[in-house]
Image (cartoon, rainbow, N blue to C red; front, side, top):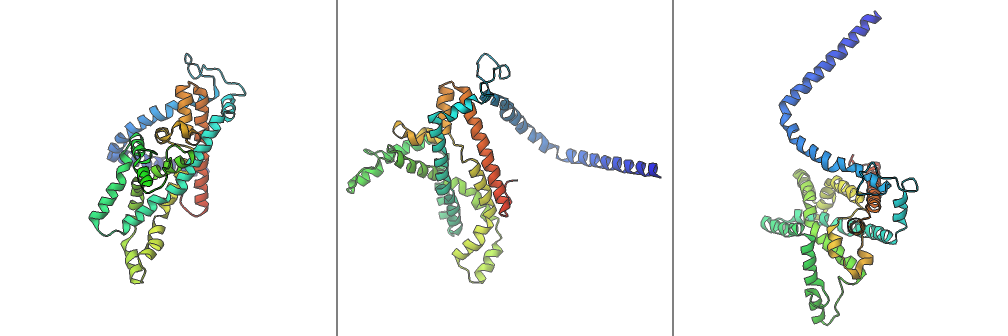
Length: 324
């Protein structure tokens, strides 16, 4: 009896696996075009994203241009020499401080702006005016930071800048927006918000479009005004989108793009303008300290992942869906 039962169980498992295999073959035959489309992106990821990961070892080895990454000798202090060197480097510590400060200011001041803009755009009733405002707000996203810096010079320079000319003509003193370290930080944050808020609002507008109109109709019948509807319907409706984007922003709190700080910085404001990306460029590419800057980049990535996982864990603890 036991042997017969085992045979029945084995037969059932084989029949189940055969059914799953047949189902998989039917699915693959029906949707094979999707897998063909997926092939090139997968090849791209393997070649340009995963294959270069082996060069992370340079952070733990003494770089040599004549040896491959496996042949390079290990650095002292159990391979941690360049990490120790980085944290004894005053320029790196200053760049780390500036990166965190500038990104926090971007997050605190800049993150709510596209949300507010999306809420305002959603309340506009004249479609032509609404589309015109949206187009004007999107346009700066397509400008490079070199062009934006050229515009900033025309607007903010103390002697010939348009804004300072207006200030001096009104009897005030010219403001060194680009030359004073503290005022430079405000200019940096303002230009970043101006360049990105219109484009970032697209995601929130798409989320708002997914809210059922019946909720607004029911609220209107109950006597709720536009502000009440915005607070009790629109904002809760896009809360999950806000949380996901906030988690991603927190994961990038120690990371920084290269083009924005590099284009806007100058020698007079370097104490506040030097960030990790420009430090890596100057010391790695120009200074040929590849092991040191690889260690800095690895540290930056690990801390970014820790921030991302922590933010995701907190969001799930607070009842939100999170990223995963």
